[in-house]
Length: 144
Length: 149
Image (cartoon, rainbow over all chains, first blue to last red; front, side, top):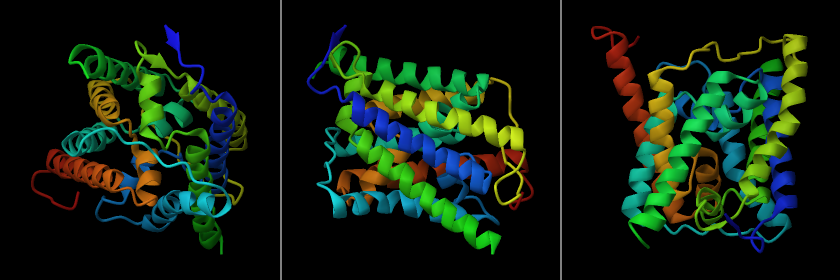
């Protein structure tokens, strides 16, 4: 294994992670809800629904976050290498997959592991493994 | 009043979550893919994001559970499902393939869409379409005769 020490950012990773954990704690302690992004977003597509407001408010906060950050400091811009077709295919897979799995990186990865849920551990191992294999195939077998 | 506080709290939690994604670098697909690329120049940052998040959330979740209700006195709505089944694993595998293709999972994609990145917007639209497909399939599966169930 070849660690890319130049791009490794341990402190900002830990600090950002702590913010994510604090947000999950806030949503549970104040709203009694699990901060799973796919579930909160997917629940907005459910009809009929009685709890649209808090879901929309959470997603609104998430979308506004980079604007607030950008008002105070230089906003790091994302680098998106995937092409348009790959992005559309990836979006479809992520949308369907996270709903069948009832969770994504936040719901299973952060909240589920914080609840010590074996089900979330299984989900996290499965999507991590699929992610590792997919990137390996794309970058090292199919060839870049 | 409590309902209003709950909505404000949800917006604030979303904001803090989004700031965490920006600060940690996880709103950048290139950095996520560098973590998933074990055989390349590996960037372990994502593992520390998870460690930071779980290290913070775990004691708070334990406290909430012991308390049994929210600060406002409402019920905790924790997932009831406990079993590992085919839906969980197949769904997670599909999700992981999509994650590896683009480097986006739902939270970071929404944050990058908030930056008005055209590619992130395309990903989010496709993700919403995928979620809508799930809702349609689920509705048909649950009750063929009753569209509202």
